[in-house]
Every structure is written in C-alpha cells, then in structure tokens.
Image 1 (cartoon, rainbow, N blue to C red):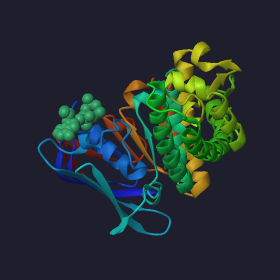
Image 2 (cartoon, protein in one colour):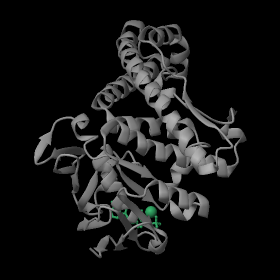
Image 3 (tube, rainbow, N blue to C red):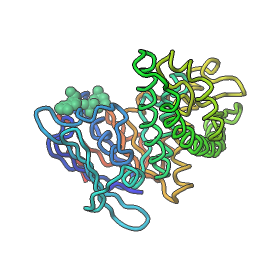
Image 4 (cartoon, helix red, strand yellow):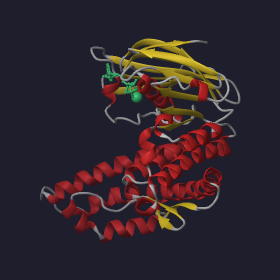
Length: 360
Ligand SMILES: Nc1ncnc2c1ncn2[C@@H]1O[C@H](COP(=O)(O)OP(=O)(O)OP(=O)(O)O)[C@@H](O)[C@H]1O
Ligand SMILES: [Mg+2]
C-alpha cells in the first residue's frame, strides 16, 4: 500500500497544505514544535479513525477555526482511492472516494498504517492500556467486524458503569435486571473480541519470535501470549457473580477492557526481568510483526509511520528496523537530517510552522 499524498485543512497548526510522498522513504524534517507529529497524526486518523495522542477531537481544529479536515490519496492492490475525515461542531464525518460513510467500521482499515512512536517503545514496561491499544489498533485495521463489536462493547461498558455508579450512590434500587441488559451485551461482544485477540496474538507470537531471533542472534526466546479468551457464558457468570463488588467499586471489574498481554523473554516476565535494551528489542519486534501480519492478512504491506523513533534507538536496533522496512513505504520524522543513513532514495520534506516543502 502506498500513500501518494495527504492534505490538511485547519488541522492542528496546519492551515492548508498538501504533501506528496515518494513510494519509498520520506523524511519529514524540522525543528521541534513545527508540525511533524501533527502531520503523521493526521495520516494515522485516516487509518484508524482516531488519534494516538488524544480522545478530544476538538483539539484537532486549528486554534480560531471551526472545522478540521484531513484527506489522503492511497493506492491499494486495485486502484487509487481517496479518504477524508472532517471534524466540526463535535461531530466527525468520513468519506471514501467522495461517498459519505455512515459507520466508522466502513472507514477504518481502508488505508492501513503501522504507527511507531517513542511511546510504543515502552509497551513492555508500561501499564496494560498500551498493550490493549496495540491489539485494538492492529485488529481494527484488519477487521470491520472487530471495529463494530468494540464500539458496541464500549458503549455498553459506559452505560453499565453509569448504572453501577448510580447504584453505589443509592440512586437506583433493583439494579439486577438493568445491569443484566448491559452484561449480556458485554458477554456477547467480549467473547467475540477475546477470540479475535487470541487468534491475532497467537500468529503475532510466531512472527515476533522470528523477528526477535533475527535481531538478537537467536540466543533469547521471547513470547507474547494472551490469556483472556472466554466464552460468552463465562463472561456473563463473572459479571453476575460479582455485581455487589462492582457496585461497591462503581465500575465494571471484569471483561476484555481489563485484558493484558503476557510478554516474556526466556520464560521470564519481560516487564520485571528484561533489560531496557531487551524490552526495546521486543517492542520493536512487535511493531515489525504487526506490519508482517497485516501483509499476511491483506496481501499488502501497510505504510510505516515512524515518529521520531530513530533518535531513540542505538545503532544496532536502528540498522535492524531500517533493514526490516526496506522496500516498503516509510514516512518518518526527525529533527536532524538522517537521510544519509536511510535505505534507498529519500524524499525530504522540510517542515516549518505547519508548512511542508517536499523535494519531489
Ligand atoms: N489545534 C491546534 N491549533 C494550532 N496549533 C496547534 C494545535 N494543536 C497543536 N498545535 C501546535 O502544533 C505545534 C507542533 O506540534 P507537533 O507535535 O507536530 O510538533 P513536532 O514538529 O512533532 O515537534 P517535536 O520535534 O518536538 O516532536 C505545537 O507547537 C502545538 O502548539
Ligand atoms: Mg513530534
């Protein structure tokens, strides 16, 4: 998959810009706070329908303006396509090839991208939310069913949590039948989502092992496992049996929103026992594996968006990631001109104060 160009209107600090990309390596180059991450964030919105930085979509709108829009032209195995996403007055609208899409599940996964930011390097040692997010982002781009199911799950979760909180404050009595309505939905979607997560992680694990062995010379064996798979009846039983506890907590304590991944190196928990270098190698292997798996499922490599990653890595890991993404389209950002160390021809895009000058 190739991103040919992207345009922005009133997005973050970008008033109106179009950037053209080469099908190989593209380096968005500029000092701090000029709009490098903003540019990638906008592209990622077209892949994921949401930002990796914020859940507050009004932040996208340039200060003093009333709407924000990002659109891109990409080429898949068949043809050139256009996507656009627009935010105005607390609502967002999406289009593909000029046709308005009613559901986010129709939008996400058309343009596929793997985003890699310095935050992803902490995926091993940070809390479980980052690892859940890893699964959700990757799976959402591969399955429209996953996107819809997750939406239903999250809506039901919000409703159930509201109810539990009201019960905790004594505002509702006889909560059981009301909670049951949401529990049924959580159990049904939870069973589906946990099965999807399990299948994804099982395949990812195989690829992570290969990539990691390749990167580190094969002395250590990592593993990525997911232990959260449950059947509908099991989720339901948990929710029913623990209702009193959940009322006291004022929130839903069981379900896939509490999932985590188990990451080990040589069978020891990587979070506690691996060195910082090993943790980074594992994070890198997971991101490269995400790209490989996307290729395996769809037949095409996704576009790699690397935000300020190379400056964070030592020479060996840097060389590894650069060889790992050779021959694919990469759009990366940096404050310094590292084009000489990049493989193939490099399109340099100079970024200054929300303006982008490509040398294409
Ligand atoms: N809604 C907005 N309207 C106008 N400007 C914004 C908005 N949101 C963010 N900005 C500005 O965008 C600027 C650039 O942000 P960005 O994160 O893209 O910088 P960067 O080039 O990636 O910098 P760094 O190298 O430090 O990562 C910031 O100065 C920020 O104040
Ligand atoms: Mg940045």
